[in-house]
Length: 410
Image (cartoon, rainbow, N blue to C red; front, side):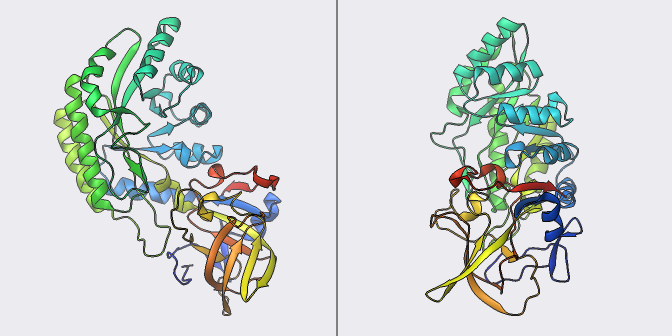
C-alpha cells in the first residue's frame, strides 16, 4: 500500500482488501488481542531492513548504536540489541533495559546532563561507558571510584562550537546544557589521568532529525576533526568515538527520505583517516528515530463523527495524550499533519475533507487538520504513520486520566 492522500508523505505498508496489515493481521485482529481501542504497533521486519540498509551503505568499521530514548519498549530494545553494536541510554531505567536486553555492558553508554549520584553509582558498578557532561560529574565519579574501589569508564561529551545545520533539535554550538564546551577541554582533559577514572574517548552529538545529507556529512567531518585535535590533550588513546547521528525521517509534505550517499562518503574518509590517526578507536553512530521511527504506527478507533458549521470532525479514542508529537505539541512551531489514513478503508472511493480530534476537552487535541481521506464512520481506524519513535513514551498519558494505549511488536 502506498498512501496517496493529498498533501501527505508517501508511505509504503502491506495491506489486503483495503485494510492495513500488521504482521499479516488486520487492525481489528490486533485490537482484539490487545483489548484496546488505541495502540502502537512496531514492525520487526522494517527495523531489520533499516539496519541492513545502513550496513550496506556505510563503511563496515562504523558501528551502529541504538538510542533507547527513541523507543524504550522492552521487547523492542531487546530486538534492537540483536541487530546493532551498542545501546545508548539517558536514564537509570533505560540503563536497566539495556542491561536486560542481552547487550554486553561494555557496549552500553550513558549520556545526559542530569545524572544523579545513584545513577552514576549504578553505571560504574555495571561497567558501562559514562559520557561525562560537566566537571562536577567528573568529580562525583572520582569520589565513587575512591569509595568503591571500582573504575569509572568515561568518555567526554563535547559541546562543539558548530551545530548541525537544519536539525530539528540542535544540541551543539553556542551555550548548551549538553556536554563540556570544546574550548574548556584542553585544560580539563589532562586532569582525567587520576586513580579510578579511565578515559576512553569522546561523544559528539550536535542535533537530530535532519534531512539535509550534506549538512550531516559536514557535521560528521567537523566532529571527527575536533576529536582529533582534542586527542592531543587526552590522558590516554581514544578507544571510543561517538560521532553522533542526526539522521532524520520524512514526516511532512515536501519532505523526502534521506540520501545516505554523502553521509557514507564522509564516513569513508573519516574511517580511512582514523585508521592511521586513531588506530585503537571504535567509531560509531548513535541513531534512534532513523532506526525505528518509520517502523511504527499509532492506531485509534473513531468513536464519533460530527459536522460543525460545514466542517466534518472525526473524534477518536486517543489523541494528544497518546501521541503528543502528532498533535503538533512536541516542538512544532507551525503545526503540520503526520501521514494519516483510515486504516480499514484504504480503497474507499468517496473522499472527504476532515479534521481528526482526540477525546480530550482541549482544542490542542488534534491528530490531523484538513486531510482528504475516504469517508469514515465510528468503529473505523485512524492510523498515524512515522510513529515508532518519540510516540508512546513522549506523550502525557495522565492528562485528563484517559485510558492508556497498548503497544505491540509485530
